[in-house]
Structures are given as structure tokens and as C-alpha cells.
Image (cartoon, one colour):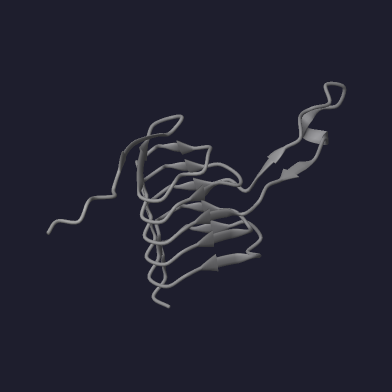
Amino acid sequence: KNVNMDRGVKFGTGTNIIIKDNSKIGVNCQMPDDIKIGYDVMIGPDVMVIGHNHHHSDLEISMRLQGIKKAPPVSIEDDVWIGARAIILPGVTIGNGSIIGAGAVIAKNIPPYSICVGNPARIIKSRKTTKKE
């Protein structure tokens, strides 16, 4: 309900995709199969979410011929904001309320309420605040 996808968004083969209410995916984003997007998620333009890697351990066989290494689904939890041209690598979970800066490369799970920037991404701040009385 109330999901907005801008023009040019691509979803692999279109299988095993969950997008919850009030989420938006920006122009020209590339999404994999097996992705979970929570409630109230904002994904900026040109974001790439990668769903798998190539096997590469056998030096006697071209990597191209070693096949695909499937990863667990990428999971973007509720109330996440992902900036333009961020890259999210296979199997990553981005925790509730996190902000991913434009151009960040996310290779590891991100705890809830984190603000992450850079390549490789690092947490620069937490959004958690103490309650004022």
C-alpha cells in the first residue's frame, strides 16, 4: 500500500520480493531477487543492491565458469533512508531507523539507528537519543 517506484527500477527476475507500506524506490535503482524492504523506507536514485557473488576459489577454472554463490536475502528494515548511488552487497541487513549516506558501500550488517557513510561504510553516529523530561 502506498509504494512508489520511480522510472527505471529493475528487480532481477522479480521473485521473492517483499516491499511493505509507504516505501519509495528512486529512479534507476537495481534490486535483486530475494529482497525484503520494510515500512517507510526511502531509497534514493541509482542505488544498487547486489544479491549474489561469483564463486572464485578454483584457480584452474575461469571465475566466469565457477557459477553463482547465493547469499541470504538483503533485508532493509523499517524507517531506513538510503542515499543516492549507495551500494549494498549480498546478505546485508540494514537495521531499523538507519541512514546510509550517498555513495556508501555497505558490506556488513548495520545496527539499528546507525548513520553510515563512506567506502567501506563506517558508522559515524547513532540516531538514538535520550528522552528529555
